[in-house]
Amino acid sequence: MRRCLFAVTIAAAAACFDVSSPLPPALILSPVLDSLFVGDTLAPRAFAYYNTDGQRANPGPLTWTIGPNSVATINPTTGVIHGVGKGVATVTATGGQATGIALVAVSRPLDLTLLLDTIVLMQQDTFTIPVAVQKKDVAATDTVWFDPSSSSGVTINTSTGLVTAVTSGGAVRYVAHVTSGGADTVSDTGAVVVLGLADTTAAGYSFQTVFGTAIRHEGGPAVAVSVPRLNGKLGFLLLTRALSPDNSLLDSTIVILPDSVIGGNVTFDVDSIGPAEASSSRAGRLDPVCNPPRPWAFWRSAHNVAPLYFIVAYSHGTPADSVAGSITITQFAQAAAGGAIISGRYRFITQRTDLYTDPLGVETMRGTFVVPLLTRQGFCQG
Image 1 (cartoon, one colour):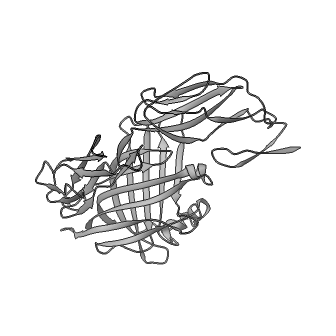
Image 2 (tube, rainbow, N blue to C red):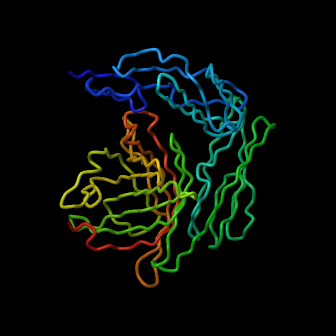
């Protein structure tokens, strides 16, 4: 005999189970993601508890915890949350031999978020620093400005945040400020790296941010590859890797284009793709990579230490528009010994496969890169 439990879970999925092998009890908190400002309070999370028979039940008294306490505190009995400092805190409720988890983002009454805190450019590239302003008084007028560059290798327009890469060198600090209503001022600091690659044997580099229920600020080695497709034409892959400083996370991003890249100052749409289509294969090769139906992208975040887990997300647009974002090749420089060095940036939306029908599964990716462009014959020959 089988019974089906239909519950609003993080994955918004229906779970069917055999009563001869009961599921463990489940405690589901909602909303799973919420926000507040420093000094404000939030009501306790609503919850739904299901026993091992899949029936809605009373879990008894719940015990509430939250962390880190530098971001928010919680009443362990009532579950009322108080915002303490900027950041994201994890709410945990325990009762009925089950645990439920939710996230709370805390902002200052006036806050500034760098949407790309490290920017990687090639000489002569330009890029406008992207920022987001959060404010408690939505009617207040805010003004954003930037400090002048401290290095001759980079110029920064103090009004617009337009960065111009002049010469290669180490990281150059940039500082962004925002004021609202002429009173409070909030600042944040990022970096600009101008990379000059001598030839295609040099290591490329990329940096990206990920915003959503998973948040990343990560950089690492990167390369672009021209790949002979199954139909004989050349396609394009951008491959990036990033290992967290504590070695706990290994992330990778791949952008796949059906067409080759032969010059700079060109933008390609990044389209949507579903998990089933993205994982299809033929002759030992992934068809969507070796014969891509359209441009698409992929992000994978692997937890490198116990407990082992990973997040997989594919480029995903909206019901009204299948375009998830874009990738721009800003410069294409022929290398002296053959091949090319390219620079560029991308921004696109992905949807996590573990939250594929849930708005909480949306992750926004932003990145910049300077990489060698190599040709790999035989990559798609099964």
